[in-house]
Image 1: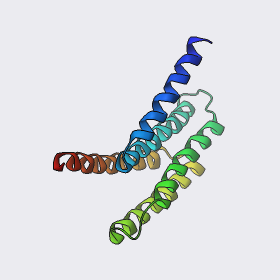
Image 2 (image 1 turned 120 degrees about the vertical axis):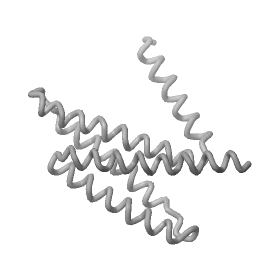
Image 3 (image 1 turned 45 degrees about the vertical axis):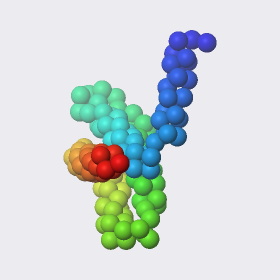
Length: 138
């Protein structure tokens, strides 16, 4: 087995272990990070177009789709029986993000991707603060 395959296998095991041992709140943070990474890769394809390189629009669409799937999963996972008002606001926010990303996907709008990434960073920071607060309360 090559070194590359060994690293790939080790990385998959690490990620699997990280997800399996994470709390629900930590999983949300992981999902926000994943969406940001997919959007970063999509944005790189747009930038290739600006630099007269050959962008791979198929990859771009795939990266955008992966980010959209994460946001959809977060939206579908909301528990409207707990903190109903918060769940409704997050549902609307996720809906806004999905519409913005769909438009960015169709029109290759870098600015929309940047706006969503900033929003996801802010949301991730909120969840990180919540996880930290829970740890200090324990």
